[in-house]
Length: 171
Image (cartoon, rainbow, N blue to C red; front, top):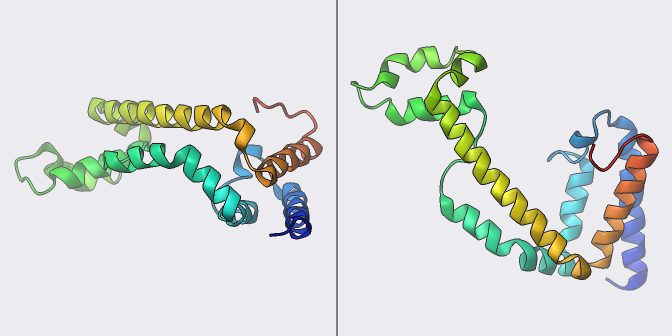
């Protein structure tokens, strides 16, 4: 894109950001996967500079995460179903006899099972490690973040401050 086209595209993104905030009652949900803003940001970063930056910063971390080939699921209800399905073929298994009961258990009952709790803790530790690495990678490359991405981030902060005047970065 030429400079003028880039400015028009960023103006469009800014308008979308501003239009979406009035419908947001919970700031962390603003960038949920299915929001219009998230879809536009994804499309924007797929362009030349954004794509190169994302590959430069995140490629190694993403490849390592994919190579783990395990589940990153942390919801106890889903962990216990994974466990039950894994052991269901063994008629001698504890899980084989509980297969139907597993589906009706409450979160509290599921978390009382130490194996579920341990798996959840392990996965949370792995996820936090990856999140830390993602954040560190961003912070270490701030000086090479493409102009448009920096501009969008600044516009998002301004829009959030306008919508939630008492909001802090910690929120």
